[in-house]
Image 1: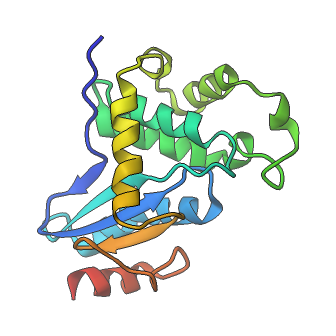
Image 2: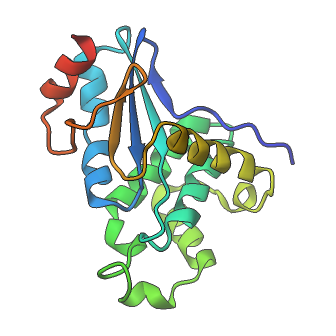
Length: 182
């Protein structure tokens, strides 16, 4: 099976708004849940929103979940399927995270169970693509891109290629729009 991941990009404008997200981080979820409204406010003709996945080891299933999202991006519906997976994880975050990052019911969960949960909640069948070794190329690209830009935590925001340390998940989308649109 040859995999081709679709970029996790929405809109087609000349300005870029990149967000580095860890799918189970509550602040990343808050950011993710604002992106559709932000794109509508800023205008798809004005901005391109790019999601970059920032796996973090203290979120213990982070690697498995990031792999599921990127696996979904290789399916026929590509970025729409990946968006469904991200939304499913966001909507059921507690079922994919550990209590205090180290305990709780997910201590008994296996990666296969996490993949099955994602499939059940999202309706996207990712298991076959998840199992393809070629997916490593896409995963490594996201990791390298974040490191090359000095990004270590989520969420982190970049506007037109420059990190915006003073933007955050708690900001209103109007703040984001003003920064991106000028």
